[in-house]
Amino acid sequence: MDFRGTWGKYYGKYKGLLGVNAQAVLQKNNEAWNSFFSLLKLKKGNKLPPYMNHVSSPGYWKDEATGRRRLILVIRQDRYVVDEQRRVIILKDFNLEVKFTGGLRWFGKQGRLEMHYDEARNAWYASIPVEVGVEEAKTGRRSKFIVHGERKVIQLESPKGNKAASIDLGINNLASVVVDDGTWLLYKGVRAKEDYFYFQRKIAEIQSLRDTLKDKLLSDAVEELNHEMRRLHGKLARRLLHLYRNFASHLLKQLHELGVSTIYLGYPFNIAQERGNKFTVNMWSYRKLMEAIELKAQEYGIKVYEVVEYNTSKYCAYHNVEVKRKPRGVAHCPMGHKLHSDLNGALNIMKRAIGKIPLVIKKPLSFIVGHNQVAP
Image 1 (cartoon, rainbow, N blue to C red):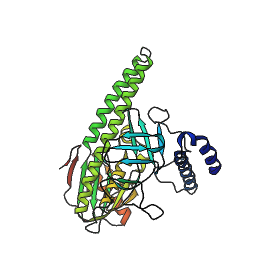
Image 2: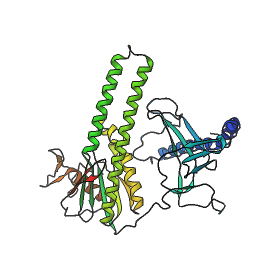
Image 3: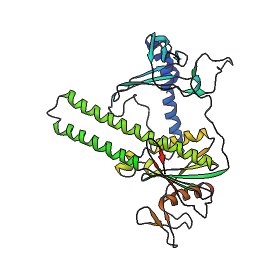
Image 4: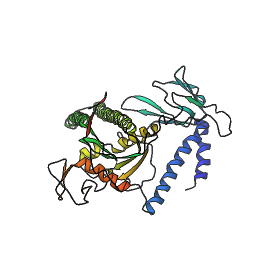
């Protein structure tokens, strides 16, 4: 692909409309294509990450729910100013001031601004990448383009010890966590399941109404029902993300107090390849859950390594023989003992990562992850 030729052609074409921000749009486009070619090389060498089974070329910026092109405004990093006092973003090339709500979390040099329209919520959102704690430009002088957020550093604490922990993610139990000293933490996902089934039922009711009356309704009425379905999908996603962040905050605080410095996080290979029923694939946004853990771990200086958990629930962690899972949630080893199946999974993840597991497991510390708190 001729990146240089394409750049020259389209920069000249759109500079009059976007000004120098046309550079930012072209840069974003080039990043997508460079990523595509990098993934092709990985695929050729059989080195694609486990959650990826095919590679697609970049397409139009589309809304997944509507299939329509997304409205996105891309602004170069030096062509806007965030006025924290007046709560506005000043777009220099468009003589425009955009009011914003919400707090500014990070302090540092600002990157390319992207604003996008969320049709379901009828609202615009701004995304500003920040080099946290960085105040100098490439010239060595202090940058003029600083976002004055609350925090100048990502890491707030250092590990208190040198222990390792492994995490097996799930649905009924959001996470089963084992520390190499035998501590066992169990986080129940009942609230996530309640949210999922409640919103799926509401969405199904609207979909049934739409399909039943589709031939009798005006197109505007059909679109209004579609809009409501998208709104509910978005609300479910936000509620799940809120639960995941509450869980990650509580978990990392616990692990920090226990002296953990390294986490081995089980990667759900089968669900990543979209093998499973509708509930496991659609409800369990595993990547968002993993990201919540990994981002929170940075604040405590805890390292996180992903471990493919394929077959970790199938074999006994202590004897490496195939187990029987009956009744559900209990792993029966033919050598004469039984384990909680999620505990067995977490132990196998640890064994796969560091080659050893604790011989004695303490009584589990069990928690329910809610929207307002994580409670025993």
